[in-house]
Length: 248
Image (cartoon, rainbow, N blue to C red; front, side, top):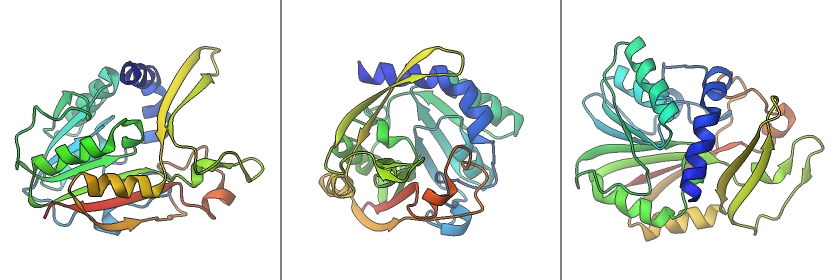
């Protein structure tokens, strides 16, 4: 039920999001708001010839950028409108990416030991059971395969950007729902799961992956995700956090 609501929100938000937020920068993977890029962080290594799966691919920007660098990419998402945009964008850039409507909560359609890299950018905050997903990621990765994912930084989400006050408790985790009123007056329900950093690292361990790096980047020149963010706050707390894991 919640997953259907999440898919509905992204279907409704897709046009605005792709026009106003994503900005279609296809030169490299952009990990999140002020969160730097793969070109600078080099978390994936040389992707030429690598078989890559992107979880929650949205408009396809990451998968397309990796394909341009020689990777063989598949992207999955639960939003039909996002996938339609992704297919259109890939066609406009003359690259071949396989896009599939599928939930990252169920990866059974993918063969074991078949991917060199799994990546997810700002999507897993919508996942109910991270340990289950990470167990499946381990299954489908080849030995020594890489899993890199980014989410919104849990600390950043707790600060009210207008007056810099603490808006909620870090200890409060689980499903959250926000009732949104958009500029046209329409009502929308936004769902996500809040977690502590320790919750995420525990889920990685429970999933059988080895956590090798946590990155809390800050790129003050970021123009891709920068709209709508208070510069004072992002200069104090990074909006994005990135985890790199390996299947050993």
